Image (cartoon, rainbow, N blue to C red; front, side, top):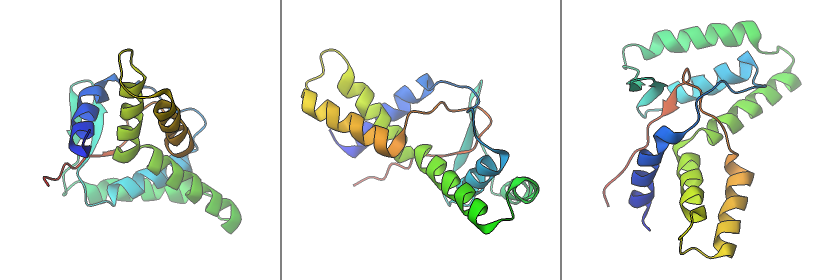
Length: 152
């Protein structure tokens, strides 16, 4: 199955993502991750009850400023502790990435009854998702990077 097919399947399955607040994340970690998301050149959106709400280029600077205030107020000034917060934010950013969404969707398809994937292939994909992507719930009030589908 091609990357394009997985991306399209991911877009179809994406609405099935559970929506709730992620427990255990500090305001600092969340704000650092969201800042990374908004600093990408990709389109960025939030899940809403009506679908997806994209941020405009004109609105990004204000949102970045708001997040910077949260970071200034909540992140640790101790370099070692701050490094851990930044590491946690980078991990969260990777877990919320389009690549991890595609990996989780691929595992879901491979695990369905009637799948022609071998048990070893499913186990390998499950291990990849567990190690790199985790299973997360996607809250409504976070910015997410849009999946880019490039024609070959």
